[in-house]
Image (cartoon, rainbow, N blue to C red; front, side):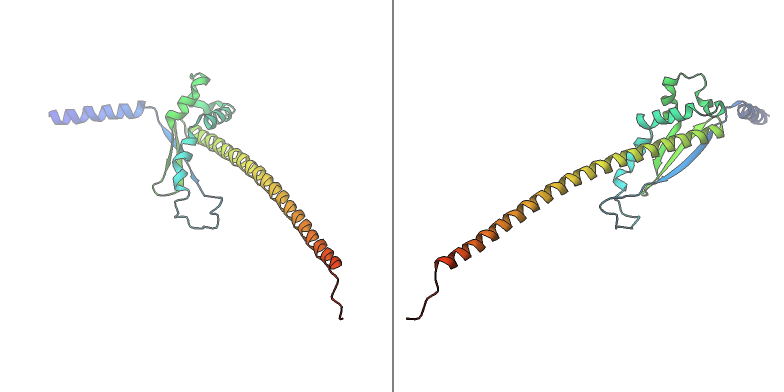
Length: 196
């Protein structure tokens, strides 16, 4: 009798919890990290060229610069997509994002999974999209700035090498001119022998 009563009470408490608990929804996105640069000819996906940077890319998702940009995007969303931020001052939105956000790489891959938990499935999807767009904007600007810096360095090196080459050509031409003049001068000074 006690067993049946205990099971009935546990069932009612479980049903009550199920009916009153706040639903948590989760949206996910995946990002494939590929390596570009000096080893671009390596088409192997199994190399660990990108593996060394995966923890860095994971951390960038929760960095201040990415989350601040994501917050600006979220602020432009409809109210139903900002349900997790209701009653929270805007200065604390970053904490809400970090508490509900997870970025993890699948073991031994270059794929980073991004998940966000929310009270609404539409809000979870919108926030994941905002964070992913913010991350991609950051990476695009970061790589574009790095590319510009590399191009400037290469341009300076090219100008330097062109200058060195012009100096060498000038020196070589001057040396050839001296030798030709010297040979000619010697020819003029030394008359050929005449037969007696």
